[in-house]
Length: 321
Ligand code: ADP
Ligand code: MG
Image (cartoon, rainbow, N blue to C red; front, side):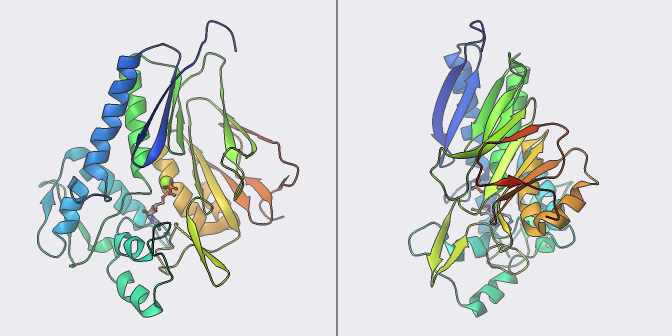
């Protein structure tokens, strides 16, 4: 890297995740405004505390609509649309199941099948009623709960990018606990490591080279527990109520907006490699990197990024191999 492009790194822990901001100017005040912005959005969207705008909606389930701020309303609108896609694995109303499974928290265990079936009835996205004129959200059944945990980081990463651009910053990177959003770089590109599933945190399979793109990875190795020799991870299939179970260890999405990346990692996880690649043929704004349990890496396309494989226990194959 040229000497005139010194990179300054700023870090914090927010939303239960490590946050890393890289800039090419030394500006503590700007970094602290970025962290404040993240915190403000976290305060609106979290479901890990008793109070937030989303928790206000959850507390009023089966009772009455709740008026929320415009950004929260728009995010919920977008999340509902993705949840209503045919055969969607993504579901903004997955809350009751996430809470019951407690995956990655003390006391996690496989719930009885009858309980899962009963909770599925409380996760119907069509029971999330949006009133555009009133700016309100209503969960029609008592016990329903929104969970925006899969997309909050992506949405906030996009807001950080917008804020940096408004502040005149054209070069930098924000990593929000695995949601990486790149602005420009003085050397023309960023190299992002692709995590090796079930390996030590810093071990990578290869490098994704991008510029002005979001890179989001969802992996089943992130959070899981084992019971009777089976692994249960934190990405639930909203169709079955059980963790998504297919040939995949991770899905990475490269896109302009990190919110799309967040939604599509879950959708693609639900589709698997073949159907996922087919779905992306109609979406020229989105690309994916699939990592399979049998150690293959499949790229849907390589228009806005370049991938270099660096682990010879994996091989690059096309979707049908
Ligand atoms: P990470 O927190 O590892 O970045 P993701 O962005 O992949 O993970 O989101 C996982 C979180 O999303 C879960 O912890 C849960 O709160 C929520 N979630 C789990 N399954 C679904 C689903 N099918 N649809 C929407 N959200 C989900
Ligand atoms: Mg996500």
